[in-house]
Length: 278
Length: 182
Image (tube, each protein chain N blue to C red):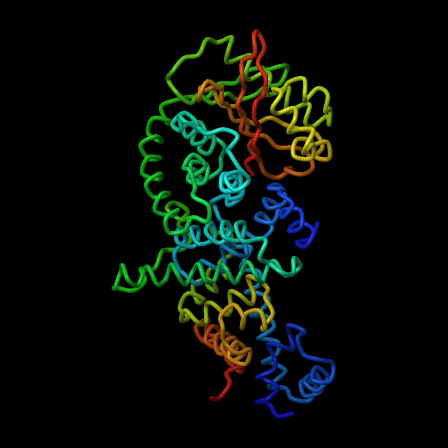
């Protein structure tokens, strides 16, 4: 094997892509040719440095919101949507506040995109154009949001940071009741307690839990820890709040978000929908 | 859990499984997109777009175990579309972004000085060379998979990698014994 051939094959040799016969021919040459031996060492070093370089870049944007974003596509394909956010503004504001407050960099676009009805198979360009428009709206919102401050409250015994989302005032007891039912719901998720979960749910959600229990149960995820909950907004007669949380197993080094809508039923508040944001 | 099982779960409707896939691959995708596009925000958009498309087209992936090469192929196309658009819009070429400046970038550089040098050297390569190196070392693809993603022959990929490594060594002021005579 000539030096030229060996140098040509070095990269594949280092990657382990050569078959045994070729590899032993390269190895044989390297053992007897000092110049190629040096080339081998240098290439190996450069390759390993390149591989490590990946870890030197830390993307600040969170891409995990993607699935949630396309949920609306999926729901449309499956049939009528379970709900539509009429007052996108409240929801958008809540999502934005969470994104800002949660030490997560700017990822508000995907959260917001959920409020834009996506045509099935929408072309990505269209989507990007929509996103740009939404991004502009975000900036306006952001300014408003920075004026608002978070506070810490104790809900059902758990310390949770409450993030205000809008200036409209619901009575405190409504806000508290909605937040409490949501916190209890999450606790039941982590306890794997289907009965408790259903007792906090509207009949529609009860049916859905029966159908897809694994979407709601988190008993394989360890202990839950609450990070933040938004103030309660109102959208089409439903109360809306978002919770950011983590746990000790599945989301131990990152947070995720659960988006709730809650319905008033007589003197009780019941969870109508829960959707997971990554 | 491996990609294969996660893809299967995601196909059955588990957004959680897809979220885990996103987490597992986002960095490789981001670094690859950034290498190709040279702009952190464009890279961010491309990654977002690629995940979205992968999600929508998950049913068309024949072999669930081959999720990553498939995903990277989508990403490369997304990047090329972005490049095409940019060329139509901005005829003045690529405006280099300053690396390391955390503010205004879609990533933070958390590496060493040596890594920063390498990072800069990488950016002096031409687009074709940056792309093969990124797919090879950031995305850990096999030569055959890179060839498929770029729609070129495997031999072309190999020689591009060799030339790119040689260029890289030169711009790092290292000796370049790997340089293959044309």
